[in-house]
Image: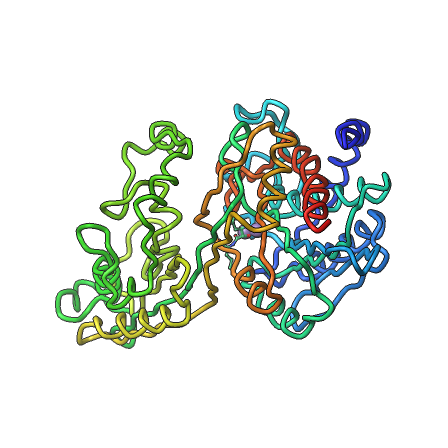
Length: 462
Ligand code: BES
Ligand code: MN
Ligand code: MN
């Protein structure tokens, strides 16, 4: 399949320009002001799938944003790959920290991307990575290299919890039957260290509200005599970790799977430089749960983090006030076997139970999802591994990621098939952050590697 390389060479500029056009549409699912743009993006994906050779493409309406479904069925007796991705993006703020506007993509060189990287919201997460699959399909259909059936399911609500996709999957099991699910929405260790993501963490996301007095008070007249909701909230949050950075919620660790020493030793073999890690973040030390390495802390261990906290006066200058209310948004990353709804309940009960007299506490659950691990001896994993060998000249390292794609566990439950996570992003690509980017090299390498997956996967059925 040498010609995928020359096909990319011949079409590289067009591949980049098409992605750039897609990145110009601000498909921010969290912000209803962008509704028109999110819908416009779905239409653009539909057209791109038609052009890439799908026989049938449709926009499937949901109660929220639509799912773009496309398929090319060449022979019912051949295996079917189901590609999943998302066309929605995270809000771009804080805008002033971007070096170029988030929806005006530019290609700029960086230390890690001397070939250039596309800077735009969604460049890596997930428009760029999703579009690699569209271009790989284009190559396969136009060069008579598509060896099996393919289905595409591209959603517009991943960044807000995939609630409607979950319903769509449950209601369309027949339509979505497949032999493997293929997703590029994760990362790899480094450009010269290919890896396949074998695990995703689950998630429980909650908001808490602490209410004290019925109105904001003068902090001199009332200070010291009533509970200050902000003081109380910060104290409650601080108590959620002990001196070893262990989470103190009773029952929180009950279902956490403990990896064997052998599995941990295997994990520790992945190349990692603590110095480079600290340097890249400008921190003088790492911080986390006692007894675990950095890579363990951010993948096989559960966490609890405040994502935002607010209340009282935050404007210019000083205002002496005790606020009536204080708020925080808290995420808990979970590992396989921890049930996100159960963890949400444990959190709620515990948080309410530690509220001191003088305040009331409300816990508002947001969204969540289960974690996922995929075995490395499945047909799909082996095909992916060979595909990387073909294009990187190296066997990829299995690696569990700290991020979450909650729908993946549901795919396995509803569709009974394994998901293979072939991510081509780098941790330094700044997803969800200002100056998100995706290396041109990574983008093209993804397009090059994907057709090999189809080939090896189909071969394994012969
Ligand atoms: N693509 C990411 C998840 C990801 C990134 C996993 C890198 C592994 C490596 C996805 O779009 C995402 O951001 N997921 C959210 C959860 C969702 C429910 C909002 C997350 O992980 O915070
Ligand atoms: Mn994503
Ligand atoms: Mn994301």
